[in-house]
Length: 462
Ligand SMILES: Nc1nc2c(ncn2[C@@H]2O[C@H](COP(=O)(O)OP(=O)(O)OP(=O)(O)O)[C@@H](O)[C@H]2O)c(=O)[nH]1
Image (cartoon, rainbow, N blue to C red):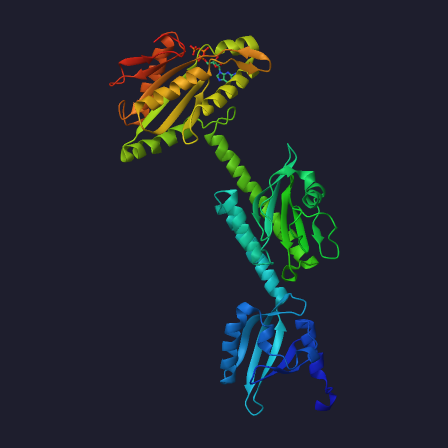
């Protein structure tokens, strides 16, 4: 029976047989070593085994080697090697110490493919989990970057999104060791991304295939490797995932391309879901015509602002604004012109306040301004007067000059109440007083919220 086994049987094994001396140098490797590690037996023999081990796994590999040399049988030790071509090989080892020869006898089984499938499954699971939990796109992109980094070298990673209407591209997520985030630009200004997004095709460029075009910044170095994958959804291409490599350490291959393509489908639906959630959230909180906060969001803000004002003992003011005879614009120029006027009014109101203040549309032609951290009651009066003054200028509605005046009611915390509905009703009542007194004026609720004090109209004699 023994006579039938050819003497070079070990050479035919698919696993690699390795013999390593007490100093950790390869003294023998079987021919399969080259298939698994990329080095021929001649290249491997004489080299310290540890040199080929992936840096993060070296310490525990040395510990495992010590245990084997102390007589422990090693039946399933796993670590990573850097192949001659730079790619990572995952190896499962069985090994023992041969005392009389003073060598370790080890068999290497290549489990790269299995690890690959496992990490891909884990990545896909993590991406869908990230999509469920992500509060916003920034958080989602950072998580996706981290997950892709477990599969591929991803030091330079960007998410490009295509905005179809102005046909522009923006980079809401961009981590790059050499280039700052590009500013939004017409899609075609970025030839590589434009190719990926317009054609919906993956593009892998290597040093041999990179076109000799100028880099995005004249003095900036060009990447050696560029891998762009479309973010494909049933509704079309949302944008692209881009990986760039400036050194041979981040070389991308056809295999990486397939991997990123596979993951990108999950990423695209994660982005789509998060965008949809964001849109729904926006619809629930913002007025769709003016994009100002709606009544609900305004009430939420008031609810959190009041206790803050109480804690910090600052003033808080509400300006209730209703347009005078707004209906006439609808009746004379049509509803769409009325819509346009409401949008222009919103814009002018925003111009009268600080970014930290809130301008909201309560509905119809009713707006409200929430001024926080006012240092004096005069501040609210000054803003109200500024609003009156800004309405002096007619509104240009596609060539129609429309004059519109507001009636404004002001109520303040703590003078007129510390509870949101009370404060709001005082501001509302003060606004009605303004309107009933002819409109185009400001009325401040009195100390009880009932007695009212009028502010002069701009230009009116004091
Ligand atoms: N174009 C447009 N009109 C709206 C919208 N929402 C409400 N309106 C109209 O706005 C008007 C608001 O009513 P009022 O405040 O009583 O009308 P007004 O003419 O301003 O009356 P005064 O406030 O008493 O001066 C109604 O005619 C509504 O139909 C909207 O989103 N777009």
